[in-house]
Length: 224
Length: 229
Image (cartoon, rainbow over all chains, first blue to last red; front, side, top):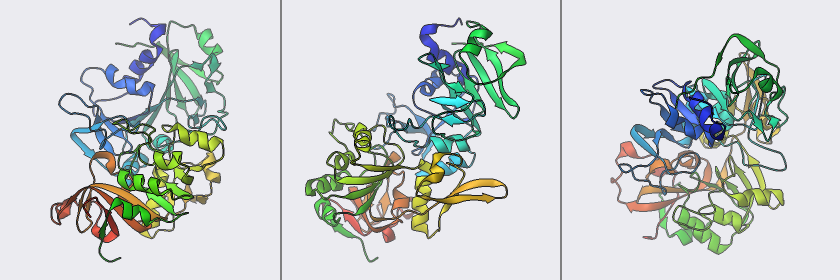
């Protein structure tokens, strides 16, 4: 598909969807990551984990009516354990999360840096929603994908070093934006794909972090 | 511990004195003991320390104003709160900023394990969560511990004077079954408070919950709150 600047979030969600494999157990953060399931390639079925205690979380539908007094997801929206799912308690849920039983978590961010440090839970003195399960998820999930717009109001979000309090250090594996894909390696941050709607210079100008461009860098291909 | 006593939600709420610490089960209002909270709100008991995942919601699923624990926050009965995420109840943020509510935010997985430790006789919990963050400096963290080259925070156990829980089915002996995501922190909180009150959505007969399905055993429950008392 061609890049549509009016659907930046959909583009990012669709690219992240390619990272998830059939059968993966996945925890999606609020906002943009919740769009990912609608972009999954055919044949890819995920098991969604809601950290408040649902394995195999599904949205209510005609066959599974909402029970908002008894069952919600981690964002407080009506959700249910679907066929093959389970309701679990919070200790088991976070045991699964910290214990490496979640294949991937995808979440948005305020800031992320070239060392894979993440800051997405607090703006001191301004916004104090709390970390909820985010600190545990990024420490424990096997793969941590940050799905975010490249900049916030024109200011870079991908930094040399986060300025806000960390959610966790050295936890991010991959960053997907509308401009490019970065992976965090022991040797630094590497651009593995870029969106040909932007030049490499434009991406450089929108990124504060230091990074290298992979020798085999590819164009981002996103199928809707 | 003795046998669980069946009381009305009003009688249950009256057990809680000014200044008490209360653990409240549930997540975003689901699983809060709504009737006991309603009565506690009417009594106006103040200076409470609330230990609950969140501040519930300003509007419940049926349009309820100040659903669940949100009632006790809006009424200023809660002056101190330990939780993990308070973003969905803007009143909490407002009161944090004006200084009338002292909030400690704890990672959710650490919060539940601190409660579990408090009820299970453990001296604390070692978790990698929060390492390298400002959580290291929090009052509930004793120190950073290195084991086999990996670093963990030693989180202290947490207990409360009361646990206010809610089960979908509670038998007359006090055995509890939770429905859906009511479950969350409840079974850990049932072990970590001096007095445990379980509100019964449905009060059922002993044996109606098969032993295999009992989630919280009656041996932990002091009071069952039910209109049928």
